Image (tube, rainbow, N blue to C red; front, side):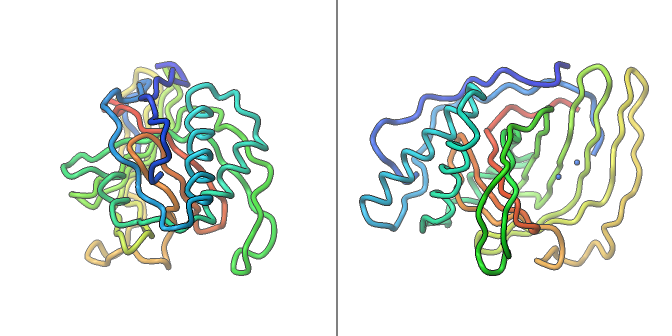
Length: 235
């Protein structure tokens, strides 16, 4: 499998609309071709709606080409984080309605400057250099996070998740390692009491935007990233 994949995003509507890893065999995911559904609708003023729609367009262009300059991507992420969006559809859009859920390729990550609790500014963003894919299963309450290195192998983490408002908390339970043509090796990993629901004491993502093509979230440490919807990586 190639370490990166050619992105073929679905076309975006022109009018403004509401706008981490277990080991499996390496394979290069392709972006899904299903038609776009309506993005979440912002509750801000029309000017804010326009800013969010334009920022989403920037991110979709960045996901497709990986040529949008980092400062422009950072500015788009910052605008989306400031917007007040309806988050009620985020989890279903992110994780689907049936297992095994939906998969998303990590496109861009950004660090923060300043105290997270007092607000922070995004800086030093860059496109993620290898194929990293996350699977969110809303129906099964599961998460899988993997890095795929083509013929060299892959490393993935799998565990359980919970969703409250716009926070997705998770706990990994096992690791899978795949090296070259050798069989995969599965190793139990943390997880603790499996009856305990993940909470903000565990790693989590705070979601700011999710539609059928891209998703934007901030991690517990304050770093922000965006993903592009893709096909599931074969096991």
